[in-house]
Length: 355
Ligand code: GDP
Ligand code: ZN
Image (cartoon, rainbow, N blue to C red; front, side, top):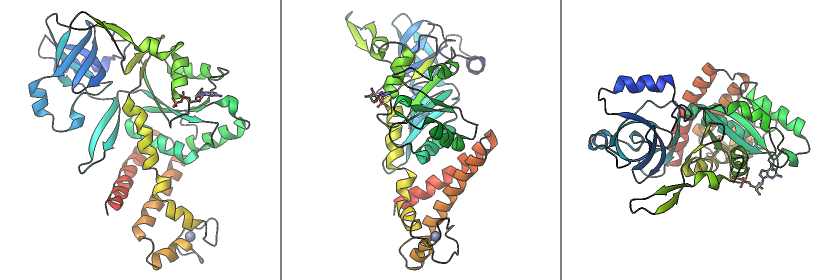
């Protein structure tokens, strides 16, 4: 296995050498996790690994354990095809979600993604607010977003849609319209699929992520994903990996967690969260009401009448400002700023929900 094709960079190599005081360690990339057992790609082939006892002891949280996409330092165990993971190398990016429950534990669903394709269908009514939320999610992760507008063959006003979406990305994020039917637009995706790059797809169910993956693979995904392996008893077993090598040497991460991120996105979405304010706004006297002290403001009235918490409006205004902010600026510094503020908004919303 060629680790450079799998995304190994000089930076990771250096991190590894700094850490490797023990000559017996080798580098690997996690391709699958199942109940704290890891399938790791190494130069010696795929090894089935566990974390060391010391690693477990030091790992305080779930995010301290390896996740799909992670580069790890491990010690192979003789010729058994097994190994022990001793450390995780610094993550370049990570996608995570908070698991529901009393403690907001972070569950990492994919790491070290270079480019994330935010897939949105041109078929259903294209939701610009949703794209903005995906953009925030991508920036939060550290991966570079590319907006993919799928099912272009079903769209009658493509030009207009492109203008609308480009307006929120402000030239800072590429916007590509594709059709898996006519194969239009795929040539614009190609440049992002460089050997050694790691990509991931994010988008609601039904927008065409599987179809896109199949087109990128050039054949049915299952055929490629199913690697025939010999198990302990010498039988051939078929299993899938969540790290997929595309024909041109690009790595695609496709984990169930990555697919479920959209569920989290849609249930916790801000439109729903602030739906009562959106609804009230529509009855304000002025259409462009800022809900400050304009006459006939339904939102302020609701607060005065004790029907709406003033903190709700504060959060809402904050979010509106954030969104306007990214619309104005798409540079790195602005993104970092948005990330910071986004975190506090999220926290406020959570507190509100815990009432
Ligand atoms: P996923 O849930 O995001 O993985 O979506 P799928 O890849 O399963 O696609 C959902 C449906 O959309 C399927 O019926 C696909 O055939 C259809 N679809 C996907 N891409 C296109 C496209 O470019 N054009 C058209 N017309 N249909 C598409
Ligand atoms: Zn108002």
